Length: 511
Image 1 (tube, rainbow, N blue to C red):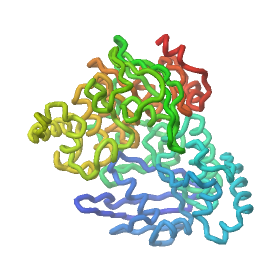
Image 2: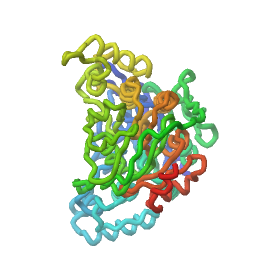
Image 3: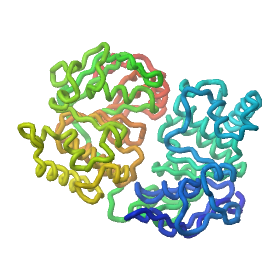
């Protein structure tokens, strides 16, 4: 590996009203190095990436590129310098082809010759083991293939520093292996990679060095392969925060929910129709549903919450048929929902936490004879904040002012304090730091131990194996068999995530 410095940040400071997001940060990324940037939610990682990519300007400090001081005015200048970024949420147009999406980021002179561009896409993608058909529409690609498009777009722009934000959160285990092989080859050819992730074992397996942020400052640097994930986590959250979840064995009780042959035709051309989904849930158990994003997870949640009315199938809760019930009626039976989208579906960004509590918990004595009992609302909200360690400025804080991890703790707490008999939680720890994830896991386990059933929809396989009694996978709107987590290999689960399974109904019937 070359010792030449590709990127150096010196004393970077970025301040917002009431918050110093970056406080004197120093960072060095060498040529050909895979460097991890770690930290809990709110540690300053996102702000620092925006500084590097030209989305925001630092208040103090200096950026050095290939040894020379620079001012990165905007993302276009960053790309021209050789800095490419693959965001956690992809920036692709689904109605355009691979080549058309890549052409949008190129100068007109390079984008005009479509045949030459398609040849370059094939050459670059095959060289790095990420074969792409430049004429395929993005809407037909898997999430892993879409990530390839983003990376190939950066490589065709001749990026020499590639910033990847949570790149494995939407991939199957097999796709993660392929991605890591690609990144190692890029590194060997001199491309630097800045790798942002909460998955510490992946960081240990891939990265040469790591910089850890806490409360906007650098709390430590390390070589991940030479220390344990626990030691890295301690650098992220300090000594006082729990970093592991104690999961006791559960003994499931009687049948609570039975779904039989749920089918629903999705009118959204980019959505996924449900096809004969069958499973059951028992009191006191956590059942996990794995799958790459976009394979019917959101549609399944809507079918269970009552947001959509299934076309065919039967849904029985505590012996009562509920497929005709509306969302508020299902909530009244004891069903609580934690959607994947925190802002917009889980909470209204511009409303206070107290008002957001009222949205789903009105039936907890917060409204009487049609009148809001504001004192009860504030007290309920304060209980959520205190019991779940939500960092905020009280119940009058807006939902949009909280970090992702703290808002997720608030949403989980709001539902948990209503003592549901069934909780459907979609990606409850997606993008949250290790401390927040532990708090959320412990809340789920408490609910389970109190006799509730939990359906956990997640792309985090470590989380599923840690918490679940039984597990399966969704692919293309079809559900695999459910198997005991202790008996299910990660290879088998990966195959199910890719759609390699027969109908799971026999397994569900036997469970």
